[in-house]
Image 1: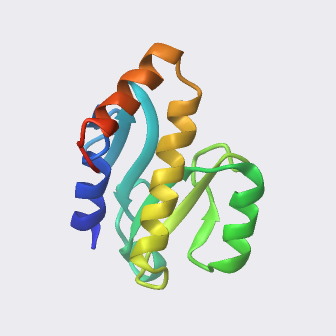
Image 2 (image 1 turned 60 degrees about the vertical axis):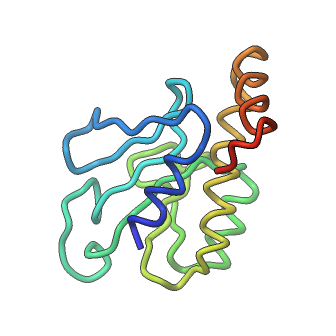
Length: 133
């Protein structure tokens, strides 16, 4: 499951995967701005029970963030993040793949929307030229 989402994240335009928090926490950035993290358990520590699953942090509109937490038990306030603006999605199989992809798209688009106009335009042009993610 993590491989699918890892590939989905990397197909976003101008996205790179970095490891600023250590080898066990993947950080996904678009033009230098973080829009997702992926780790096995809390901060890549693995573990048992809930911590044995992959955890993904995604940026989210504050109102939608609360709504998603109410709908899905596997969506919690962002671990080690601004809890108003970030959710942690525990990839335990309880959330449909398409819904997680929608959350990834929203996170990416929220980050892009805060970028300078020229960066937004280059990303949108890339998308229009047929480079689908």
